[in-house]
Length: 390
Image (tube, rainbow, N blue to C red):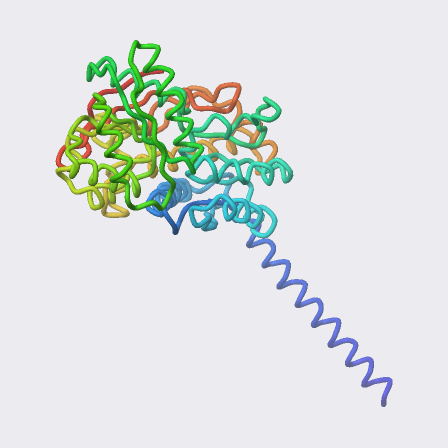
């Protein structure tokens, strides 16, 4: 009897193990039908509006591709990790997406400092990351070695171009002869933009009459703005992010600084008019990657789809994240593979890609060669001023 009972028990155990294996196999097969893309974004913290817009843009791209059948019969899924707008957290988020979530590619952070912080993680694990907007040259070229970072890319133009665009605009369109710089000293992005603005402005015959600094999360700028005011600059260049920029412009206007204030793409947030006040933003201009008011068919279609899904007009962070996601998907298709290394190799070959933000070619340093636009703020509303080609 005991032997019979044991045999029966053994038979049931084997059957149970077979069922578990079958269930496990089915689960594994289901997961293999989904290709995971990661998004290491600023969902909370100082740059949260940037991260939310980027998430929306990436989601829209994936939704459109999935609606057409996905890639080789496989659907795409976006796995989002919040880097909390902090460089250290961005490195942790990168590690999680690669080692735990097993993504095949990553939409990298918005901020240059955060992308740079996670760069070694990408390199060590051989998984690409493409930032929609990080524009500091150090993002794709390691300053310590002078070598290109194999697994890092961007869908944005770089600071030397953006800084020179704004310096030329100040000199040629606004006829400025003198300028003051007010720099976020905690940001690689801001320091790089200031450097390239200064170089081009001085090359144009202009003079920098003041150079001051602040730190992220500062709130009182009046003492420094008073010092800047005493130099009577024709323009003030503030290459920072919208939170501090909004307060700087508001407090500057209250002190009587009514000259043009210029900046970069870090200004692009619907929160800026709320912080600065709509009227304070008159006579303010910034460089950007695209304008939703551009009449190109690609932009019109993108804006219509975004507004239908999210009920708001897409900013440049949404457009560039959409572009970055589509560029990775295009590389997957050309590679005919979901192998991260093969995807990386194809992404590096991107030429004349018809993106929403314009034609994109990735050069030898993985930087996007593309046009820029100048946005003018009128009573808090963004208006398209002009387009600058590279």
